Length: 164
Image (cartoon, rainbow, N blue to C red):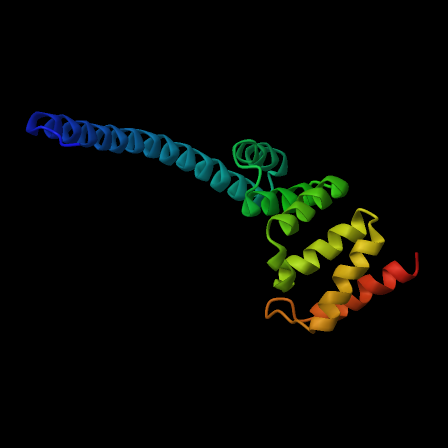
């Protein structure tokens, strides 16, 4: 089967048009995605700033808006867990912190996250989970420069669990 010169031109023109349309579509979709990302980043930054300033209720509202668009964001769930814990809804905070761990199982290697998770589990009365987390912290013998009594705090939390 042979194609005439004009058929080849039409095929080539069609391929070029398809590529151009694809590039335009990709550009439009990328711009929309960039806009959504910038909006979410702005809300996230506002939530972190509000949390730092102690305005926990507004911080919780902002981070919940981010989570509506990005429910599987490790960072947004982490900030939500910490903010909600500071706002004294420990059981809800435990759910967010567990979700962080579900999203990124490697967080078990993060000493700061692990002690926060352990504390929140203790506060949420999830003692078995807390014990597992705190024993992991103890066995790893982690220390943090800005938390010199890290291991003592772990021991205190474990003793608290044992006494219940």
